[in-house]
Every structure is written in C-alpha cells, then in structure tokens.
Image (cartoon, rainbow, N blue to C red; front, side, top):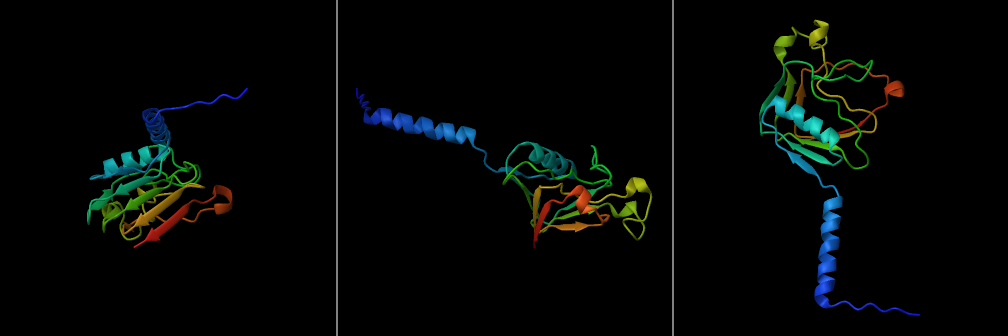
Length: 165
C-alpha cells in the first residue's frame, strides 16, 4: 500500500520556517565581548571558556589593560600563576580571538624592579596560558611585562596560539 502526503504551499513554508528556527536555536555562533576594564576582560574570558562557542573579544582601541595581580582561580597545576584566566579547550572550532585594536595587556610595572620574573613569588605571573588543545588568536595586541617560564610540553601539553599584528 502506498501513502501519498500532499501539503499546501503555506504548510511547506511553515515547515521550512520551523526547520530554520530549529537550526538556529540548536547551533552555536560566535559570541562577541567588548571589555572596557581588566575585570571585564577576566569575566569575558571566563564566559568564553564555558559557553561552548567560538568567541571574539574586542579590546578598546589603544587602551592599556594593566593587571595588578594573579587571576583568582586554580592555576594549571605545577605550572605557575596567571594574570588572566587560562584559555581552555572547548571543543573543535571553539577558540578565542582577542582583537586588540592596538591595545596593550600588561602586568603592572610597579610589581617588579627590572626583571618581571625576579621578585617576590606573589608578584610573579605570566599574562596568559593556553591549555592543551585550546586555541587563542591574538590580533593587533601587545602583551607586556609577563613572566615567561619554560613549560614541560611533553608533560603538560600545549595549546595553539596565533599572533597577528
């Protein structure tokens, strides 16, 4: 027995619209953040790390974001401290892009004398860290006064960083 279903043109349009709405509601698109302070930048990175989407963070043009202490939270075990939240792996294609627009992210220069890594342990921290499998793209942003330390990439893995200036 053969069953034939016939739909009117308006029913087909309704079905197409419902299919499109379902597609839009169930698929992720890039989230965009526009932080004007270090605190907002920290919160935006935390949100970007947990929303399951590709994310764009657009810094204020030519602004200097001065980090005055370590980001609260658990640092990557055995790997030191960070000024900004660790960039984590959210899955395929869900990296973070920071569009600097000529802005600078720096550690407060008053926290050290001549060498960012030569001071009290409480003031030694890198600006950012990228966990294994995570992706970060930096566009036209300067990173200054961070404490760069060697990482055992075989033990801790490595994330992906692309820098465009």
